[in-house]
Image (tube, rainbow, N blue to C red; front, side, top):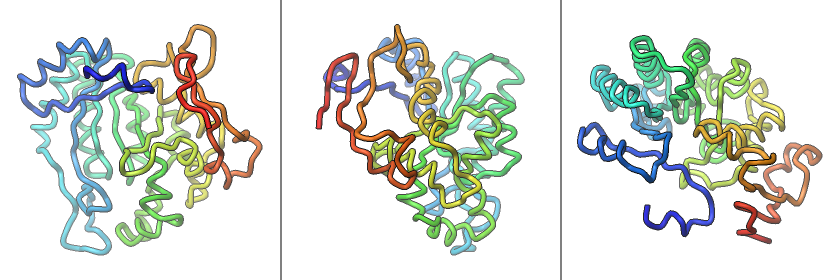
Length: 283
């Protein structure tokens, strides 16, 4: 925290206090975090590690369904405590069984303690069901997703995911079109160091999704990596697009992503990066 002013880009940290009361109190009292504090936790592991929680066994290992890190009771206690404190909640949940646990807890806490515009989050949201997408929309949950997982981790045709999940479940992986059809807030990230921090390559992954029915258009993809990234952190009043009164944070690109062929968007060069009106990178 003491070095935050030395970083040439803006950051909005999430905190992971665990379940300890003392550490959670430290989070709430941290002036560095500002008005909107995001508290994170996790429910399952990763699909690639066969630890993401599924309802049916992995296709290549029938001995495992993955894992949940917490019981329902433990997890709900955490969600209730953070929600009542007025914080935003962010939960790592990659697959369907873990996602159901998160949505059950969110629905229960919002029923007991309603709050408008909470923007509680799910990180990843990779292998899902149409019913879960509908529930996310109904509860006002936001999704922080990583489009480059498709091209870097799962293979250009989702071949690796198919080997882990089988032909049917892979159709429910990274369902961006279905999600946006429900007007859900989705922001794009990298989960670095899992993938590089490259929004343009993330945009490429979105518009060239190997499942054609899940592809989105260029405008939607750019929103996911710009204004939606600001919205998911309650910062849309100061950044996310270029307009008077907002921070002068933007990049200058060598080509127009709306004009180049979709398959070339990921190779567009960044000529310049401006943060707060100052040039911090120039090619």
